[in-house]
Length: 197
Image (cartoon, rainbow, N blue to C red; front, top):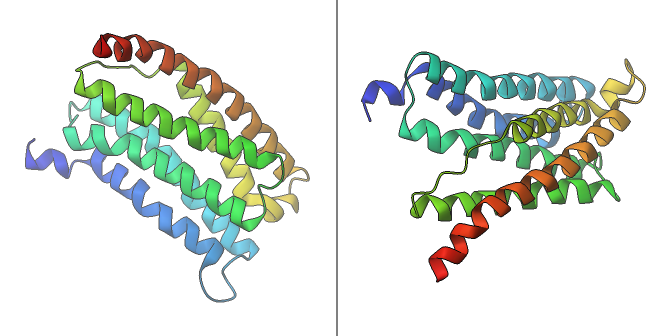
């Protein structure tokens, strides 16, 4: 891989998305009066939204500028999963996601781990499992849900029902996640049995 591609704008955007993960967490669990305040929540939302936008931009720019690279292909899905997993965990720890809604977060996290493992195994067999349009919509709904949940009580002051909207979208994303996870598994299961035979 050319050295210039490692430091291309699409890859820098991906690096930025990874760097945003601890920054969002600090807004909730850092030290001082700022941590956990309304200002902290809005800062977390802004960081999360900017990171989510890079999820679209890095891939688009890499294709448009012909700057696709091995490190970009590797880090892009990892950055997405780190961002989503970290936010779901901190929202669960914060109590924004609680009770039955924890199952929606568990479904999302388990699917991401399952699909990642499946992709890694199939990659060894030189089998590619393309991302479906429905999976892209799932990611969009998931990110929007997390955005609302990060706003939480701070968002309630401006839009009553902010948390409820976030939880509803989270459950919607979880249901789509189950379907797309099954879809990926069905696409890969044939190759798993072929390898065993």
